[in-house]
Length: 487
Image 1 (tube, rainbow, N blue to C red):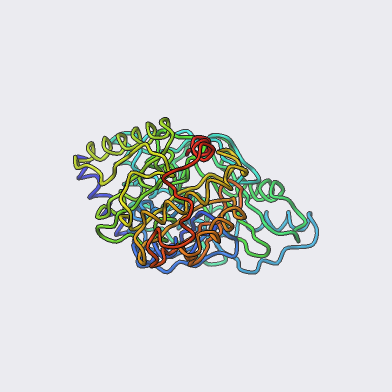
Image 2 (image 1 turned 135 degrees about the vertical axis):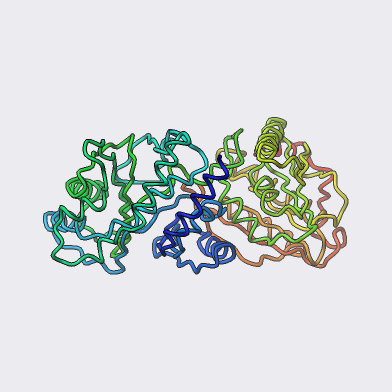
């Protein structure tokens, strides 16, 4: 029955084969990396927003499921309307009137069709609680919980599919004659049966710019009131069905409807550590090193395994080796590996993952020299893990030992750290072994960090002065640094 339902859903999606604009939030700094994935997997051209951390692309609705499977995107929304140069009024009273008038002018119909279709193709059925959003995720009118109304059984799914077939014949509000009444527009968009409980909604405003005479809360409140009046929906900040997004960056305004209840980066990891890396950020780092078939890729400070786990799910023809000096971190990584194996086995695949996990000392890796193609890791920032002081000893030792095991001339390293001063100093001390190609500046939990892409020089390790400090004889203080700087 499930296969039949999916086939029926696919047919309906083809019937609703309309072009829509999808917006997505991505890790700040990895906008162009995300755009590359969109082009590669959807054959769609993405444009980077003026507001960092967002991209937009046009797709047909039959590709909506594939959008959810992209690895670079955090949150998704369907665009109702974009304004490249919205002319805001100069007083709060005038802006309030503008928001009230805007709600009735927007072409809501297609976006709401996509929202409904999106609910039908979500993998997890039933209600899901929304986790408390972080300050970096949202601002303005923010609730703490949400429920996602998705068909929970076969009959409900069939009913929803039938409703989609009806909706497929509707017109967009923007294409209606100007003499259509507001009541007719509202009736067409809501398409609710008499006595049906009205949808619950909230408006979330994300605002950037210093020339506005209003706050995010002002815009969310005023625009939300107009949306409520137009649709006759019920406002609910915590248990909403529809989340309307109002994104403002200087004079750029985008109105959208959220398609994700929680960020898509919440995948693979079930056992978290104190500094677990977001899966979307880990994926972006991996794309920077361009893994090739048969590459040996090592994460020497793996923590909970976010980077190697992301790697084995996407690049299964490479081999990944993860390690950490902290036993708890290694145990967490093993638990995350078991979770993925169980999930893939339940999905019909019982094959293992090309990944091994080892507990080791970073300054004395149990690996042959010149045996690794790529080293990729999240280094301790010296804040929640380790300390800035200990990083001055740790970083040079790391880079030397990484240079020893990395293949001269072809090897690469992709290293994330917020301790930029210490890292660049350590890099200068090992300049004969590493050459910096470029740096991607990213936002990690509100911290300005750098992803440094390095190329291993052709110099054989042990033949130049930079190798004078032998990594295999790490001092006691360095070993102490390893213990403090795990994960």
